[in-house]
Length: 184
Image (cartoon, rainbow, N blue to C red; front, side, top):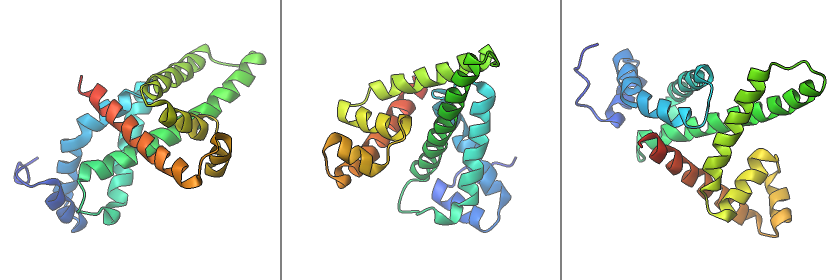
């Protein structure tokens, strides 16, 4: 790959990518892949699943590049996509874990699948435990117990707007924790 685009910042690369310049896509991928990989690997124990999520993250980002707002850092926008994919993956695995629990009772489960699901749950819980209690509480209710926003508001006796604000802040703080750990 040529180095002709190395001097360009992310915003300029996005502009070129939107003009269908393949090298701009490649440069963005190369520039951000290691950090995205580290971020995801802190949450997803299974290396094959983590790699799939890395590829899905860039695929989703590049497919939605037109929605990127250059007023903000490209990396911030990219990490919001990565974070949402990880949350979706966790939700899916949480449901798989419940199914594994049921299968375990019927003795039809692969023990390795149970171990991986449990390791992923523990990794996520460690990250959540580092949040302020009010943030951890809304994250657990929303993403582990699948409460709707209104249900969280009722459960905690707080306004709906407060629930949304806390969730937004909690996800931001969680991202910061994951990024900080990926650099350690």
